Length: 211
Image (cartoon, rainbow, N blue to C red; front, top):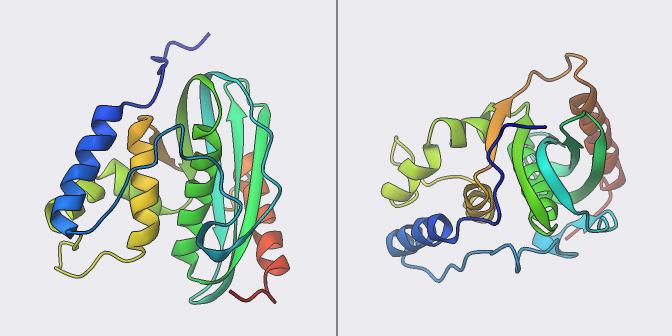
C-alpha cells in the first residue's frame, strides 16, 4: 500500500484563493472549475476529442503521463494515460485541434488528462509525468504564483502566453495538489512513448481539421 496522503476532495480554499487573486489582478470575470463542474467537455477550445472515457473509481496513487505533438503553428495532437501504482494502465484519452504550437499541445495534454481525472470519484493523489519543461517548471518552480502576483506577466514584463489554457489548468492541478515530474522524452519510458505515439496519431488525424 502507498504511504502517501490520500485526498478526500480538492482543497476548495486553495482554488478559491488562487482564483480570487488572479481575478483581482486581471480585472476580468473568471470562474473556477470545481471537481463537480470540471467534467470532460466534448467541445473544449474548438477541438475534436476521442470518445469520453467511462468514469473510474480511483483509490490510491496514480501517475498521469501526458504528451503533445505539434510544431511552430498548425494542427496539433495531445494524449494522456492514467497509470496506477502497480504500473497498470487505468484509462487513456487523446484529441487534436486545428491551430496551435507544440507548447499548446503539451498544455492541452495535461489539461484534458486532469479534466478526466477530476471528473472521476475516489480518494487519490496524482503525479503528472511530462517531458515538457515548459509545463513542469510552471509548477515545480512556482511560475504560476509569480504570474498571478505580477498581473499575469512574466519576469520580463511580457504577457503570459497561452493564458486561456493556463487559467483552466492551474486551478485543476492546485485544487487536487497534483505533483509534477519531468521525464526525458524518447528514452524508452513505456507510457511516455505510448503517449508520444498517440499524440502523433491524433495530430495526423487532425491535419485537415479547421475551426
